[in-house]
Length: 216
Image 1 (cartoon, rainbow, N blue to C red):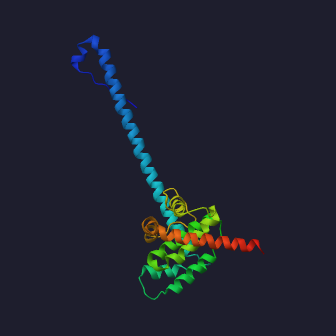
Image 2 (cartoon, rainbow, N blue to C red):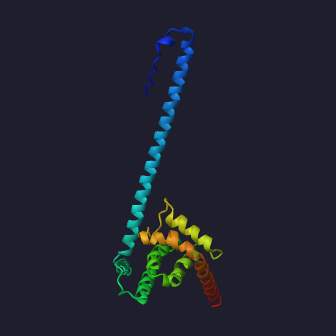
Image 3 (cartoon, rainbow, N blue to C red):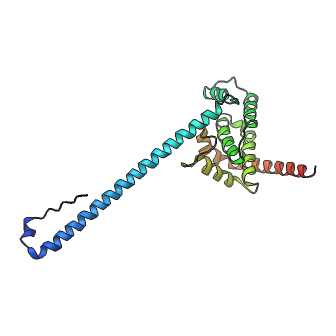
């Protein structure tokens, strides 16, 4: 890195002050160059971070589309299509049957299942809010299977934020389309009382099921 120092004629006419003045000029110029270099590195780092985030976002959304359209269990692909087209031909019963069929075929560890469940129901709850309490049960149960039942609404919110919505998250089910993201980020928090109510029911049902298994 070449740094050029220009000294005025007046300075040259004062030999005693020359060394001190040139040193100050050099020091100030060096500080300016260093600050510029640091700022440039910061901008590059920020740009690279945004690029990585955008690429990760694209991969996550592609992952969701791939899972939904999988030919082995694509029960929900047509359901989503009907919902996005705002058609009235889809009954609640058909929607729930498609969801339960898809959910029954999930195969992975409990954390991955929980991530996928929340991504899946986000779209369904967005378009059919009347089914929210029914649709919440399996995603909540999947979290219970993952981290135990000593949890509440805040635990659920943290799980979703860190494992699905965070910029660096790589959820097993990817990310749902924008309406699902809106539901997870904005609409779900406004229903925390409902989530807590359903969570308590699911916890109680799961404990009873475990107790029954232990008495067999």
